[in-house]
Image (cartoon, rainbow, N blue to C red):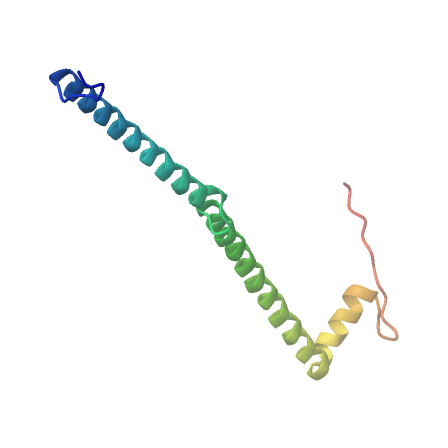
Length: 114
């Protein structure tokens, strides 16, 4: 008899079993590869989901800082206008911050009982 494999029922079952195992391993490896790619893009890539969240938080914080700085800038602009135009405002600053008085005025300082 020839030593070549002949087609028998036993070989057919073996081939079917091998095909099932191969299909199963191919499916599992596809799933693992897909998960690896998904997770690497979502969490470890430069444009990942985590980086996106951090960038949005930083943008939000910087926007709040800009709003506060603009308010402070507006306040300084208004104070600058008053310092240029309003002599009573200048006088109030001189009295409050530098304890200046007009000639003939007396300053009374009261100590608190704290």
